Image 1: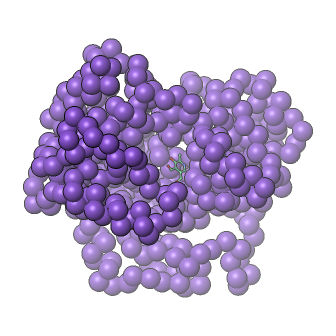
Image 2: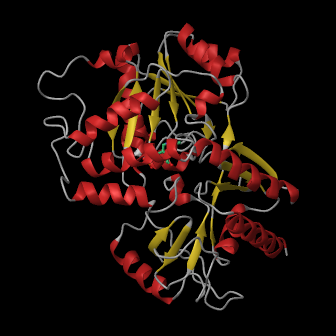
Length: 431
Ligand SMILES: Cc1ncc(COP(=O)(O)O)c(C=O)c1O
């Protein structure tokens, strides 16, 4: 598939096809059953279709090919990671070149040149003043570092988050999610003990109240809530949160793991609201498909960690992995060279207009869109998958929101084909 240009869906079998099914059977035997959803197999109008996963084999641009040779158009960008497109050639070239030189260095002990270059590059692209960073491998890593930094800088353990928040599921950050109680419930006894959840869009008085006892050191917010439903912060809200946090001696941290790096139409979604946060987490698209994330902060805030006295207070074996850093440098170059924020605005505006013409309510910005349906999103997503389009439901407590976070390379023809398939999928589910 790599030699081919952007494709419309090409389905050879039902979805999932026999090769995917056979692989998923093996998966079911050897992976913890909580990880990959296997749904009851049932007969369907297409004979061999069911709700099991399909197995990815290859991807390029906005296309994914499965184990049966079916070609799909991916409007999730693989959880938002493939912002430039899957396997962007510039990222692949950078990874190949790096693989020929150095695969692994020694994290906090002996750094490698790619990590140093990336840190300098991130500082140049960051919101004003956020010139230092702690690198991680996952979004959860970046939020983990952000929460630790805020505690050290403020001297306070409390965190304010907002309904629908999703910041990852690792133990250090699990208690911060307010997306689905079932994720946290079994682990309540061992999660962050001082989290306050406020309504999304909470007014000034509510925020002030939550900060009044001086226990909160961090107000953490997604400028556009992702998993919680592609909800942009109301106008002026982030500025108010910043002012209230600072008045109460707390820091304002933004989670740009999904909305950052141009997806929302500006390099950082907070800059749309003219807010400069104290801390910013980035991930997903940063590594161009390799696992990499970063928590950015100012020199003053990062100084709260103190200097390393020989053994780092915060590190991991693969900190600043050379392959991930090389890939991220290529991603950041591409974000600028392609004027990715403008591209996301233009592609997103066209997609939103097409959805609007169908009478669907669309929210979000750039290529981070939530579509309100009049039927549950899950069966619509499955009906779209059977037509060769990959999408995911989004929304906390709202079953009818479809999330769209496609790659910026999505073509007009792919968009139009998607809109046609959505018409069919909605008709099928409404019937
Ligand atoms: C806004 C946001 N923060 C944090 C995370 C967690 O990132 P990861 O899954 O890489 O740990 C996600 C993942 O979807 C996210 O959307």
